[in-house]
Amino acid sequence: MAYIVDGHTLIIQKTQIRLFGIDAPELDHRHGKSAKCALVSLCKGKTGRAEITAQATSSAMV
Figure (tube, rainbow, N blue to C red):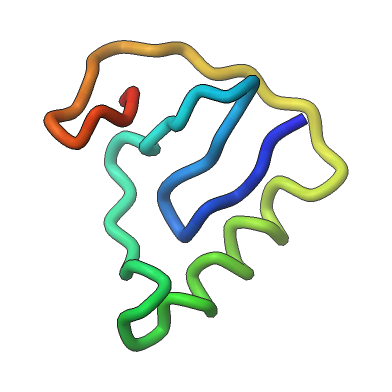
């Protein structure tokens, strides 16, 4: 199961993952909640797979 953090970040099995190539506002910025809702809508009820390619400077996996 995954948890959507914001419009470009999710958590899978306790690993924070930043989606590569997605530029979305943070939750506390304008349209941040809308961006999160859009990602939830895309992912809800679907099965996905994540491939870690790098580690970002923010300690999130990319």
